[in-house]
Length: 330
Image 1 (cartoon, rainbow, N blue to C red):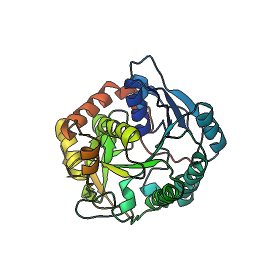
Image 2: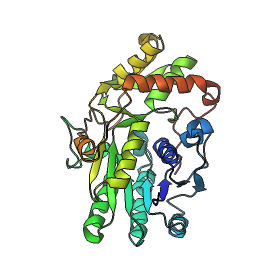
Image 3: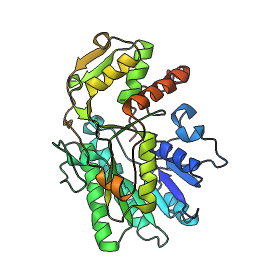
C-alpha cells in the first residue's frame, strides 16, 4: 500500500474509529490531536489486533500548525483526513470565538499550507450536515448552505473557503457529511452512550424539547468504511453524504434503548427546554456514495444499539470514571 494517512482529530470518536479501520486494512497511520490520548475504553484504535499501531502526536491546530505541516512533509503523508473541530452545537453559543478560531481561521490556515505540498493526493474534509440548517425533504450534496448556529456557521465558512481553493488551485479536496454517528467508544455526553450509561447507573436523562427532532443515526464502522472509499476514490471537489434512509426522533431512540434495557422511559426521561437554534430534521440523500463508490451500510440501528449497550456494560466500571459531560477546551 503506497498511501500514507495522517488523521487530524484522532482522539475524536470518528477520528479514532477511522484510525482503527485503517489499521484493520493494513495502512500506516499517524494521528494528531490537541489533547492527550484518553482512556483506552474511549479509543477504538487501541482495540485493534494489528502489527501496526497509530503513531500519535499531541499537537494543536490552533497553536502547532508549523509542527503539523512539518510532520506531514517529513513523512510525505499524501492523504490528510481532517476530523479536527470544535464540535458541540449548543455550546457554540457560549464561546463562539473559540468555534470560529478552530473551525474557520485555523482550518483555513491549514488549507493554505497544505496547498503548497506537491505530494498531497487527497485532503478529506470531514464536514457536517449542520451547514444546511433546518431542512425539509431529502437533502442532496448541492443543497444551499443555511447554517443556524455558531458551530454550523464556522463549519460552513471553512467549506466555502475550500471550494474557492479547489477552483483557484485545483486543491485535492473531497468532503464528507455524515448523519449522526454512534457506536462503541463514543464520548459519553452523546445521546446514545449517555442514555445507556444513565439507565444503567440510575440517573435521569434530560430530553431537550421533548426529543421531537428527527435524525438519521449511522454506525461508525459504516462511516469509516465510506470515508476510506471516499479518500481513495472520491472525485476531487465533490461532497459525499454518508447516511441511512431511516429517520427516528430522539424520543423514540431513547425509548428503543429503554426497551432493550427493560426500563420504563416515563420514569427515566426529564423533559427540559429546547436548545437555541436546534435544527429539526435532517434527511440526507446518500445515493451518490452508494452508486459511484459501491458503498452500503451494513449495521442496523437495532444491532448497533445492542453492540453499544454491550460495550457500556463490559466497561461500566471504567466508564463511570470518565467525563459524562462535555468539557470545553478553548
